[in-house]
Image (cartoon, rainbow over all chains, first blue to last red; front, side):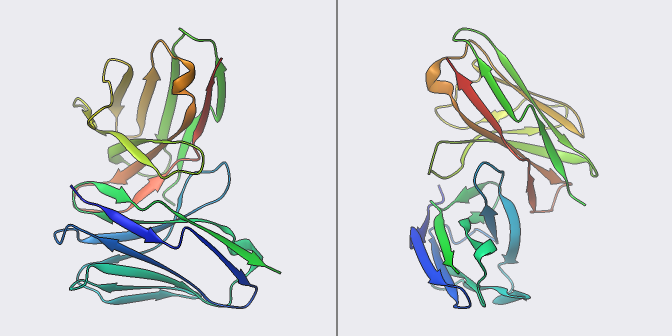
Length: 109
Length: 116
């Protein structure tokens, strides 16, 4: 089955700095790669996604890149704000979605 | 759009009792719903996939007789934890997918189950 590895497990940045979270996947057939933000005690919220026929996608301060050959994809958050602090999960999907272990992002004011 | 609700948000029950959790898609029809379980500081683990009108598909290691899933309509799926034990205490989250051929999953807010 699919295996998704995510790192780092924790990330601390100063407000205004950029944050990068990286994931690798094992199944080359996976074709959809969403990123979720989860705040404490809440369900995950889809923040951005990318399909396998696209290399990069951007939505305001958030961008995702995908390298199909290397089977890795990354989340980039620019101009971080304290409200960006949360746990972020990457995932890879074909018929089923497999999640990474999560990254706890802390943005210090 | 794409709002998924869960009820209850928190439940405490005694060991040996059963608990039902509801998952509703409020503004779209969900042909597929998923049930996940999440332990503290861990990732989401898929328990089962349910399609409207058919039996749920359970992941390996998930007891179908213990975790009963019903997806009777395009907007409602229920998870019943039968004969709950303290080790069933967890955060249960559902998600819904609109239509076939779409990928996006929209998650509910989760249900915190505590079994005493």
